Image 1 (tube, rainbow, N blue to C red):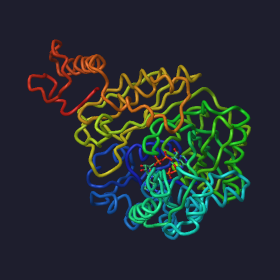
Image 2: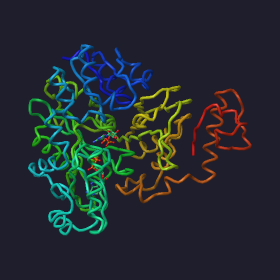
Image 3: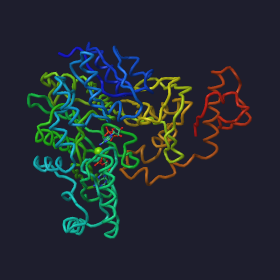
Image 4: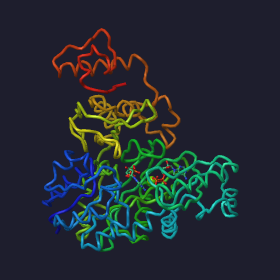
Length: 501
Ligand code: ADP
Ligand code: ADP
Ligand code: MG
C-alpha cells in the first residue's frame, strides 16, 4: 500500500483528496504557487513545497516541477485531481517513468478516450449508440459538405481535444460553416495545441446524463449510477444531481450497462465518467465523450451511495482488486451539488477577485461543503474561480431541493461577489422543482441572470446588513436598506465589495 502521496492540484479538490488520504493513513504532499502559500490545501497537508511563480503554466501545469517535488519528497504516488494535468498523458507517462504511481487511468486510456473522435470509435465498437458525427474536417471539403447535407442544420463544430465547454460552435446555416470551421480550428489549436475539428449533429433538447465507472487492473468493471448535469451555462455544468429525474429504472439499467461496455472496450483503468446525451421523450441516449479523471460533481454519487470515490481510486491504483460487485451499489435518497463561483451573475458572470472578508457556509442535516478557501484568504485572478461546492442530500428529491435552497439562502460571503443568489433562484425555479429541464434551461430563462426586483434585493440586503452589523457591533442603517458597500455612511463598508442581490 502507498504511504505518501503528492496532490498535483489546488483548491477544493486538493483539500478533498487529502481528506481521504489522511483517513486511509497516507501522508500528503501539497504543492503551491506563490498566491496560494497560505491556502487551505497547503495548511492541511503534511508537507508542502513551493512551485515558485503565479501563472498555471509555470506552476500547477509544470510537469517537470511536479515530478521533481514528488521525487524529492519521497512520495510514491501522485493524485492529479481534475483540471490542470489530470487528463494529460505526458504527465501520467512522466510519473510512470519516474517510478511514481499515477492515481488515475493509463496514459494510453487518456490518449484514446480523451479524444472525442477516437472515443466514439470505441463506443461504436462496444455497440453503444454515439451522437452522429463526421471524421476530422480540414476546412469545408467534400466530406464536411456531405455530412452537413446528410444531418442538416443546425449542427455543431467541435474540437477533438476539446473540454471544459470550449472549442464548440453552433452553426445555423451552410453559409456559416466555412468560417465556423476555421474559427474553431484556430481556437482548438490555441487552447488544446490540437487543431482537429469535426461536425456533430445538434441534438435539439438533450439532457446531459453521465455514468460513473470504476475499473480495476484485474478486469473488473462496474458503474456507480448516473448524474444529471443539464443545468449548464455555455456548455459548462452549474448544478448536478443524482439520481437523474429523467431516467426510468429500465433506462437507468441500460445506460449503466452501456457505460460499462465502453469502459471495458477501452481497457479502461480506475475511475472515469462516460457522458451521454439523452433524448428523454424518445427514451434514447447517445455516447458523447468520456472524462478520464475524477469529476467535479463526484460528491453527488458519494452522497447517494456512501462510497468514497477517491479511496477507490487509490486502492485501484495500488493494484487492489475492486471488491465491490455491481449488486453492492445500492443508492439511497437524492443529492444535489451547486458550484460556488467568485463571479457576478448579473454582470455576465465576470470573475470577481479580492479578500474573502466573510466566508460563512451553512451547515445542517444532509449538507456537505467541499471548499478550497478560508475567511481572510485572497481570491486571485490566476486560477479557476470556483471557491467551493455545496452538496445537499435528503431521502427524497423535494426535500433535497428545499435543503439546498435554504442552505444557499444562509450562505454568507463578503469581499468577493459570488453566484450564490443566482444558484438559489435556479433551484427555486418551477422547472427545476419539477425536474423537467434540459440543457437549454438557462438559455431559455435569461431572467435568472438579470438582477431580481427591488423587493427581493432589499430583503437580501437587509439580511446581510443585520448579520454584518451584529458582527462588527454596529446597528445597520435600517432606514435605507441600500445594498452598496461603497456607501460611506455604512457601518459595514469594511466588508469590502460584496453583493447579495
Ligand atoms: P466536470 O465534467 O468534472 O464537471 P468540467 O468540464 O467542469 O468537469 O471541468 C473541470 C475542470 O477542468 C474545470 O476547471 C475546467 O475548466 C477544466 N477542464 C476540463 N477539461 C479541460 C481541458 N480539456 N482543458 C483545460 N481545462 C479543462
Ligand atoms: P466538453 O468536453 O467541453 O465537456 P461535451 O462534448 O461533453 O464537451 O459537451 C458539453 C455540453 O455541450 C453537453 O453537455 C451538451 O450540453 C452540449 N453538447 C455537446 N454536444 C452536443 C450535441 N451534439 N447536441 C447538443 N448539445 C451538445
Ligand atoms: Mg463533457
